[in-house]
Image (tube, rainbow, N blue to C red; front, side, top):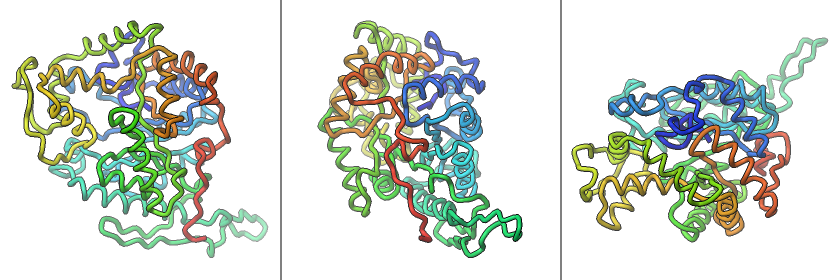
Length: 430
């Protein structure tokens, strides 16, 4: 996964080996993609946002605010990779289904069946301000819109039967009109006639990822997602319970639970010794300005904490519902609720909760336990530093996982679906 182009932290761009001057250079991402493919990664996933985080001065002074449009980039990477899946975030709040269906189908053709879509609903008012709104849609409305959006996109992907195109030069028939289907969708949010002006994608439908952790998010995943990104809920038993919850939701929707892959987030920091890895995490903390940490908390709590001293106890009332990313808000709320912590301690705990610090052996231990212990079907790797963290994982952890027999590092097929162990969906038209 790439969220911040330099790694999974606001200050990753400052770390040794980071290359912020290359964040708009296709070669930077080509190198990253080829390293991930060499490690046998199933998916290269590029997250996206539709705004600059300029609500706070620190968001301009200290945070990476530039990134390429992901589908343009993935189209380029499809030509310099061979097997790795290529997925990106697309917001269902600030896009239209026809555009998204066409882009994803195009990427699936350009990559010979390796496209994927991470469905998000967008949580920040900054995005709303770029699309003619004073504030973001309410959380429940966003998820109703997302459900309808996905249904429309999937319907558009089924516009043409797989054998609709004849390409018969002698008769002059390019396509069989009886194998074309007009969607004629009219719903709460969208009116879309169709059909889509591109053939049915090679995979039938690109793979659907999702990351919602709220009740509405879990419900959407159970109904539609084929892979879901999760945060660590706190310990192995809690991870097993979360895993079981997603599988049960798929089953309740009449789906095969094996066709919803649960992928916990894992951000490894690797050292030759544990002490060396911990010192690296200390460096990440040292490179993060206090003001940036305060503004980051303010963003997710939806009220300004900057006037509160960093080293005094912070215990606000967090019982009100939030329209922000609920999984992050819940983590902060959990910390504040279990003791008397200062803002500095909360920031420190949030930082350290995001990373797994250890040696190649101990990181492989963690992965093996979660994978074999019914808590994960795989992992969403979000590295502390790019390209350094990716190269370390491929060179040091992948061989250890192979040795243990929990990971082959080999691709199972040529398409994204084959490599994730997912079936090709049938068209809704039979």
